[in-house]
Image (tube, rainbow, N blue to C red; front, top):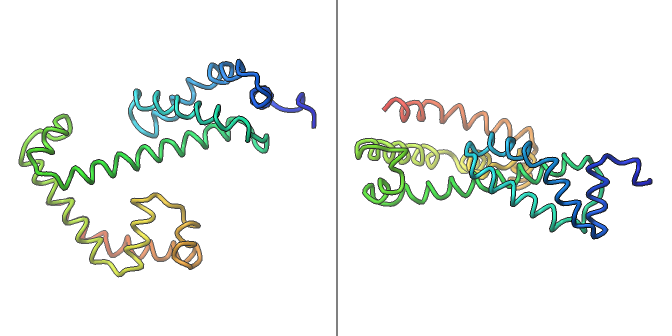
Length: 191
C-alpha cells in the first residue's frame, strides 16, 4: 500500500517512524485536547489527566519504530491512554488500601479533604474490614474470580485463562459471587 492511502494521522506516524520528529508535534497538537478530555473522564482529575496525556505521547514516541498501521492511529492512541489510566487507577487503589492499614491519626493527615472527622475514619475502617471479611469468607474460586475482576480489573478472558475454565464459567461464577456478597455488603453500606 502507498502512504497516500492512509489517514493523515497514520501518515504522520509513518513519517515519525522514518525519523521526522516534527511529526510528533503535529500529532500532539491534533489530539492532545481530546486525549486529556478522555483521560479526565477516566481518572476524574484534570491535572492527572494532563500528566497521563504526556506519558501517553511519550509512549507513542518511544514506540514509533514498532508502529504498524494495522488500525487507525486514534484507536492505538486511545488504547494506550486507557491502559495508562487503568494503571494509574490501580496504583491509586493500592495506595488507599495501604493507607487504610495505617493508624486513623496518620490516615487523617493524608485524607483531610475526603474525611473530616475521626468518627468517619473509624466508620470507613470498619466498612473496609467488613468488605474484606465478606470477600475472605467466599469459597476460594469465587474469591479468586472477584479479586481478579474487581480489584485487578482483569477481563473475563484473562480470568478464564488464569482459572483454567471458560469465559461462560467465569461469568456464572461472578454472578454467584455477587449474589452471595450482595446481602453482606448491603449490611456494610447500611451501617
